[in-house]
Length: 257
Image 1 (spheres, rainbow, N blue to C red):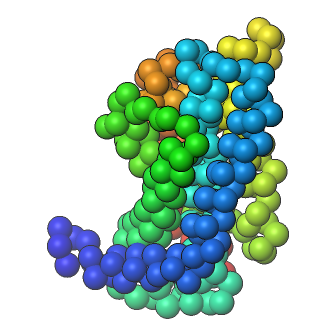
Image 2: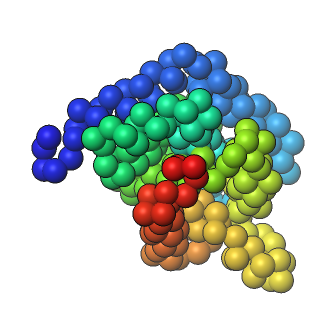
């Protein structure tokens, strides 16, 4: 025990979750790399031939932050939700809950592992993108900060989904029907400033816009919305997810029944 935390328990759960990545290497690493390559082939060739530059940045380079964020959001949710849902499905979650492990330690381990995998995936996607286009990171510290903060936020959101879901179908419901469409409509492959005023105003209600905009600013110094607002929106969503997690453990929602 150190500083009130059972580090041995955190390390045990964290190590187990990270080991699952090695067992599913094809799905965890190879598939996202192939997807990134296909996005560049399709979007880079089809749209890039018509839109050469956006905001002074070549179209191929412009979509890199959006591609990274697309993979980051979906994988953070998928890793965290499955990580906590599967122990509930097979019943091993009760062993964790009956062990001398606090809620903070459980969340830290599961969310930490999911966020770590997402950050690694984001960096792999960035490395893959450099094979197709020249990418310049203007603010590397802020890029890592947005990468880590977004990974933690959506891993915690995935943790909440994993607790809420009572079937594998529900586990995929929110990521497929809500998160992925919002990401595609959030400026991943275009600037919202290219939209008509009405649609631009509607798009600002999409929270993913602020994540992608802030992340793109860290690369090229351009953004669709103020960077401070992007950071603030991310912190608000993180706080909301944290509040839900606290409520889940206080009430035992779907954990004790």
